[in-house]
Length: 211
Image (cartoon, rainbow, N blue to C red; front, side, top):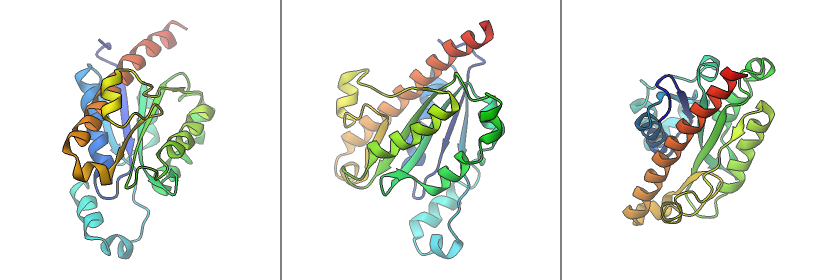
């Protein structure tokens, strides 16, 4: 079990709620493993007229208005990170990318180093670029000096049921719409990975104290 003071930041962007649902599952898994969790969203960059043109986008933005917006202090506070993004043309969405691009100060101060970090994503199609999105996200973690924590095939049966992505938890929306069992497997995989993140963060935090 992680020590009670182990801290996990789950930071994400979600336009219509899919990635937000994964973020909540990550947060639940980390909390169940004994960690203190901050669930955060990054700021919306799209103009109102673009958001309002898609009712589901506006509805989700309004429904999650009470979720705090991520700050650099959340990164400094945390012992481990889970970052979530929808796949945008095989890459990280601009909203999350903008937040990551503001992390120069804590990066240069080595405040992000030696902490585990993992990613999660969603796309509508199975071949919508999930793996390239996660690998692009992990490039940032390499620069931070963080420890990339992929899903691998830990708990193989669960991983297989959730789509078998070893790079990070990912959800295919078109499949989830027609297969509730698949959706529940992905959410379970997110909770499982959130717990792994908490346990790993606890170990690395002890090592940082010892150093």
